[in-house]
Amino acid sequence: MVTLQTAENALKNVYLGVVANQLNVKANPLLARIKRSSKDVWGKEIRKLAPYGINGGIGAGSETDALPFASGNGYVQFVADLKNLYGKIEISDKAVRASANNIGAFVNLLSDEMEGLVKASSFNLGRMLYGDGTGLLATVSSVSGKVVTCNKVNNLIEGMLVDVYSSTGKVNTSPLTIIYVDRVNKTFTYSSSATVTISSGYSIYVQGSKDYEITGLGKIFDSSATSIYGVSKTDYPWLKAYVDSTEKTISDIVIQEAIDFLDMNVDSQVNFIACSSQVRRYYQEYLSAYRRNVDITELEGGYKTITHNGIPVVADRFVDEDTMYLLNTNDFTLHELCDWKWIEGEDGRILKQTQGYPTYSATLVKYAELICDRPCGQAKISSIKASIADSSES
Image: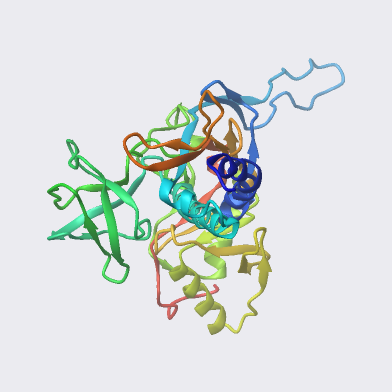
């Protein structure tokens, strides 16, 4: 007979390992390339020494001159709080009782809940990788009833619960539910249990997540940010990433210029390129126009993609539509206190009744933060336009 204890055992012993693997490896192509480590985690913080420059204790001289002065490697300490990443499922008491004598129905019930959890978690993990840590999803351009026009909607999806902020703070008392996203006209339609006034310039965030998300690429390439990981960019200018924002068409030469800059100036070897699907189409158009062979490679997690001189070029929905990132993923580490775990009560139970409701919920958690050891070893090309008519290999 199926009981709550049966459900708990299945969640702990059957689903947890599968879900953790899917979120660590298959959630996003970039995430699959980033190493994970519990090293440098101290309590609720990550404290990591990041090296820069070279050892200065070298030189040449005569056989009677003094030896070179010693000068060790340069280090700076990164400090960042572990971020709390959650995923929650809910099962009604009625559903559990209805499947009590049908193991197949019970398995389907749990499988459906876990598939939904993996889908939602994968979406948000992928989004955070390209975010700036604030959780900003979009900025409101205009509003008509409950239809909101934004600057972009690639971070939005149906079913997402969001908060709305003005310059003075949150304007909604309960989360808004996104019920439809018009990706062509960059609008979304929402429902809300309370009246909400939304105006142009307001900002959209995932419910309760403002300023609590992992530090993604948006922060690394944010030229207005004066510091990162608690270290001043003014005091340590090498923390500034390479950014080319001049309007241009995409070509092998444009990509190679950025790769060469990182190689020659920072000794950083690009091994992963991420761009929007629009930029990838521009690049494919360029390759076709010049009758170049399009090489395909398969990445960890089963992703197939085109390449530039052997470097995978991956289209990701969370990259801004005119942008391409050139990354050395060896410089990135997802520091974690532990892998994905169920939150357990003092009695060891993970399924808990929702107070006042005939439902049971379980919460998956991971405490982690993304650190890039060498922000200067990464590059961003933006303002990429469509036409290749003026593109030149010279």
